Every structure is written in structure tokens, then in C-alpha cells.
Image: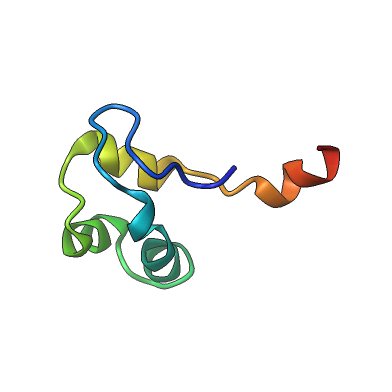
Length: 64
């Protein structure tokens, strides 16, 4: 699915950082922890949302 707009635990906005995080950490060679630090994602719950997210919208959409 798509990245949630807000963190499930604390309610901070995390969706606005997803594209840059994906470009730099997932498709680039940068360390995900350093990228999250530079983006200002400090809380562990928000970091968990970013690091553990899998983009499944292309997989699920044919079945809707």
C-alpha cells in the first residue's frame, strides 16, 4: 500500500519524507539512518514506519 500520511503511534507527518527517503536510501547508496536524521525523522516510531514500509500498491491494485 501507499505510505501512511501520519505515524500510527505519535501522529507526526511522515508521508512528506517518503519520496526523498526512497530515492536516497532504497535506490541510492546512502545509509537509511543518516537519511532519516537529515530529513528530521527523529522518533523511533516514525523511523519504523519509513524503514519497514513496502510499496504494494502495484501488487494489490489488479485485485480491486
